[in-house]
Image 1 (cartoon, helix red, strand yellow):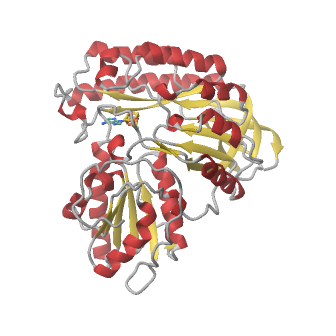
Image 2: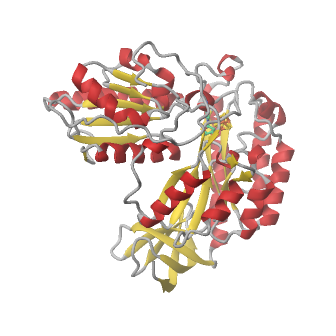
Length: 469
Ligand code: 5AD
Ligand code: SF4
């Protein structure tokens, strides 16, 4: 379990069959062991979920959480490896933590978790002074690794990707806000040529149906009114002939679970059953994040996307036929190796054809070990910058247009937190827009609202009728 020897970069991934509980991790509260901890998550929502689960593990092990990274005895950096900047940020964060602690005369423990831990393994121990390195499939061992590092005074590593699921080893969910994440699927078999995820997160696996339903019920009991199902390819979730649409239909029957969302989806895994769920299931929110990455067929092929421009656009038509008001979101990469100006313009015209409600866009970043990193034909930095700006201008235009077109709509807003002004509350519309309200409402309330004004990033709403949580 505790792999202390040399780590292979990108250890081979394995499928996990079930969620058998493993023994309770060792107690880390002995002499010299940390008493307080802070978890800092970078990157995707799956990392946010993993960070919450690690915090629950450390709390169950007797450590107290602190919001101040510079006061904690143990800092867990839950890292992202998707682009180069994300990796470099980890090393600068470690440096800053050590520097501030040195000035305070403290020596905190530092644990590196997440995808950088998986990809870099022992390299992290060589490059920076850290105590624990733990991969995304092994973090249920975090308390044991912390105890070992504290006892040995040497770094403890675990980047195994065991067949045994970590999920069964995690404590039950006890207290959450009105919106909660639930990982139902992990890993990726798609091998897009630019992407590290298949190497750092391993092969596609679906969590068992019963474990997901149990966790969803526990989240609702703990206060969640909305659950976002997570997976690197969440719509690849499948089990015993059921697809994600079937899972959503089951979750829809949980009393007091008002809203279901899911992310991130791959166009090729968009089953008819899932599309039908968008037509039939009221609690499934009308929002879909469906990355396309580029709008030109040669680039899509070089990216190994396994869909083309036309099949993506036809898919969007089918989804809109099932749920006409659906808000679409996407991811785009500009400056993929060899991308010509006219190929880039195909991406702009695809954006025009779809009309996204929002989207994320990135400059291509070569990742070591991926096929695209050795393709050559790199795009100059200033060309990438200029393309990103043009693309983001289109996305912003469409996002603003989508928000403006929402004015006059009456919808429910799930209140998530207090706003900056007295009496102001903030929540989300069904289409994942942020909505400001002046309302006598509590966090977790679903409020009937008319959307009355739109800005580029949020709307304001006026309350119609209050519905108790
Ligand atoms: N360079 C730039 N963007 C990338 N993404 C993934 N890998 C890279 C890379 N090497 C983007 C994709 C993906 C999102 C999560 O990150 O758009 O959908
Ligand atoms: Fe990466 Fe492609 Fe898998 Fe998405 S589908 S995680 S971009 S390899």
